[in-house]
Image 1 (cartoon, rainbow, N blue to C red):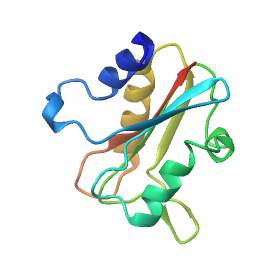
Image 2 (image 1 turned 30 degrees about the horizontal axis):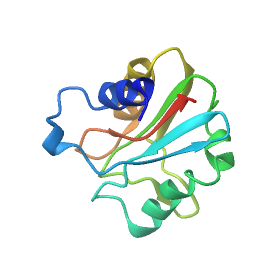
Image 3 (image 1 turned 180 degrees about the vertical axis):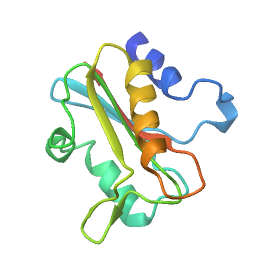
Length: 129
């Protein structure tokens, strides 16, 4: 992995020990590098949706700009996708100058809108290729 990829990865999970990092999958798609974290609390369908971004970035591009750095945060209690649509607390932030800025923005927006108790986590990161 390149330095930018590793730096962004670490920015999105700052303060978490390496052993506690969730499994991560990534792919270069067009001009972006997309990282997904199919965490244990997402449903099987939500994990498929997240992994789908690794081969087709179009659905992700409809949520946020894929230029620059980006992140998508969700609340474990609220979920990601329900009844054919994104859950209201899911927060995409794109077009940022740095990975940390994208993660902070996505987490802040998600935490402000979540209805569940659990704090939001980053489930997708986008970085320039």
